[in-house]
Image: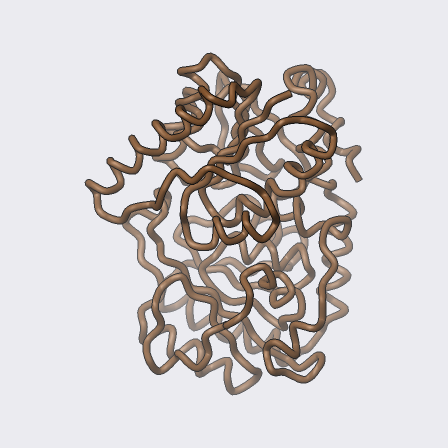
Length: 361
């Protein structure tokens, strides 16, 4: 069969890469279209996944409108040439539009309930929506498939990820030396409209607070104030999961990284204006994520919580929580591959027997 995957964010490279490689090993033809966003192209190159670039995301309102049209047209051109049997994406409106135009079925994976604009633009043109079982939004009249787990398990499940402790040397640390990873994001995604992250003053306060207890590294999508440049994380991008794996705490604004930390048994503190179903579950069921609003009061509470976590140094507690999470969830890449390769029969099978997504251990 011929599968077209559209990728719009670096995290989606990780989400789909195991599935893409497995489909190719089975003899299927796979085409990737990808936005030039942050490290997306770098990661595709690193994992030896050929792709067609649809161009950079643009910041201005006029730029966003132009990029929207450009993305549709570039994916359409690629699809006309490739002639896919099925289009797969992470709820990309562009790929969904192309599927509608070409009369091809579209599977949209998704996990961000408040991404209202993306949902409005993609949902009408998406045939099947695949979400984690903790996903809180409903889509009446649409085919929705739910699985036990989250998309971070697609690449950080023990079957797919083995941590490499050589990262301590790259970071200039002694083996097992305690450190905290801070993550700051741009808030320019469609679902971030109207919301701001930490100010420079707040970033300085957070960094200096944790520096009293552990080494601090900052991963940031935006330029840091000069005072924090010495904390900037400088590693090959593909090693970020090794950094997360050995951290004592992850603290920041990225839902994906917070969930990655949880899957790896690392406590994380996540700031957002509305949260996510999966980070809520990782807090309520496993105590691995601590969710806060980005308010002055919550920042103070989160700093206290972070200091408590670092000071307690209770690694066994987090590993035990991770084991419970793994016991309750599936090998998400195995499920995704089975679902995509067998579609649409796989969809009908799951609709008849919702227990099927529990069998991919």
